[in-house]
Image (tube, rainbow, N blue to C red; front, side):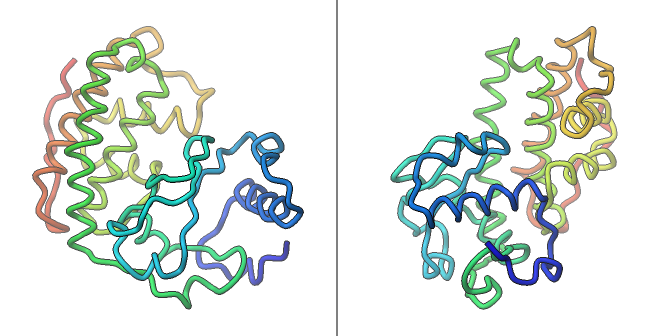
Length: 241
């Protein structure tokens, strides 16, 4: 598949992602459903199907649609049909086939995005924090640090700056925004970007869990209490160990 003007795309797309997308389209064209996950087990190729008219309105009113999440296909899902997805498509969407995304109307509302982000922190992330406290062994793993210490600050970064960022970007932002929690944030970045590097928590996985829980609790509280881009997260607190 030829992707017009790849060199002119506003945002770079990793070669691995392009390869998987190309494979997806080829398989659809050749009418070979069910082979994508066997040919390309990594990276995970999640997503959903919607029509252009869906993008022109709030994601809150989009019905359940076919989609894949964590490698599992569902004929009716609402996963990733969210305000942040619409914003990322509006600002950073990349067209692989068909009409250029920049020619489509993509709905966006700053206040709705902030409300949805705070709600996500107050529901999903609070529930995940509670699960961590009830499952200490899983919460002590390096992967838990990467997921929680980058995922939750990613939402607060949006509330503070008004701009979405990647998990790595959120981690680097949190290094300054939450200096009292630098060690757990550095651990999360290490796991994501340099997994073969030594960990400062190698002999103390339970301390990693305690630091992670303390950091996430503070981040979630800050995000839920935020009022907009002028909000600044608390700094200087001591991480509970």
